[in-house]
Image (tube, rainbow, N blue to C red; front, side, top):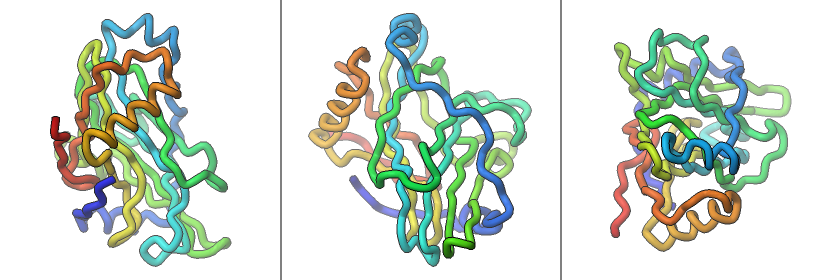
Length: 223
């Protein structure tokens, strides 16, 4: 995977200020797409594929370790924009204690449209007894009513891959969107999805990354 880093310092300052006082995101996790759901909605909905690494990053920018524990997105337009409203898509770590440091495949059936990142939370530990959370929600990830953290889109009847989500620790613990590097690596990743979700038609997966200036780099897959 390509690992280039561009960090927006305003986001980092906001995250660091929340350490130890902000609680994790408390919304129920969304259900991955089942065979029944897929067959009933594949003409009207799209399927979104993404990987998430919930494992700890040891020695993360001054912390003993850091761990991504939650990630959420809104379907746009979002109104009113407040931290209490339900999210459209929510992912949580299987555990805050012991998670293998590897990427996990996820697939979701979503209504067509544009989706914006609306929350994420990172557990950080300076020691066993000093643990806090770095959390960004809508009040920081929207600016003047518009999404500032990044967006992805999905169309009716399509399957789209939006990236691999994990941490970056270059300047401070923060969310980062990685990606497969090259056509062969992407095809290998699609094969992983085929093994986990054999009922999905993955013959024409669109490589269209979550687009962001804060949490990832632009990248186009060469045909």
